[in-house]
Length: 183
Image 1 (tube, rainbow, N blue to C red):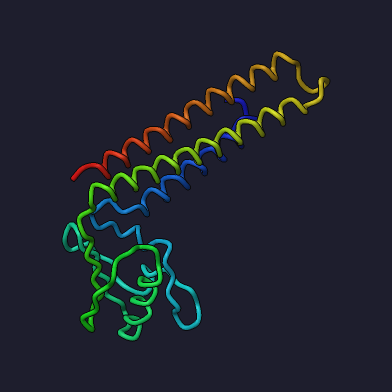
Image 2: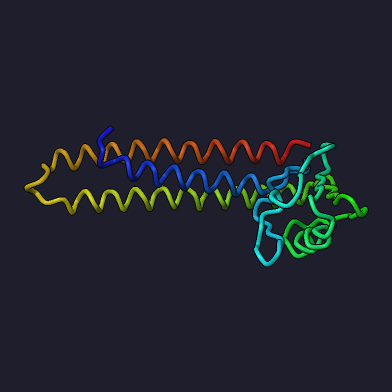
């Protein structure tokens, strides 16, 4: 692979990684600790990820349990979960917080699949934008630095890379859709 293509491959990989982290946060009826990844709690004045103030476990298929290392964090963690968009009310027994995930309804599953497809389309657009930026950069290379044949070759290589990443986005979307529709 041409060294001039590598920065675009790295950008496409970042776009794919971003999509996959978005998918990890979409809950599929089973308890997935990644739904907590974007939540922050006030830990002595500092917004801190929940995973850094307590032990997050999945004791059963549809339950996430959070055992804070300091009891005074129970209220902060509960508040962060209630104000988030997770849509689950935490239960607090004085020692641990439990999140019980209800079974998803058919309608909710279909809504989530739509969201997954929308995010996949956004990922594809990001990858295509990276391709466009690359092609523009190649065209701007002066005629003294590089021949038209070399520009064409770089564009072809970038197109193959784009196709590869679009395929990976489609695969990630199919996998998440299958996970959501599995009851």
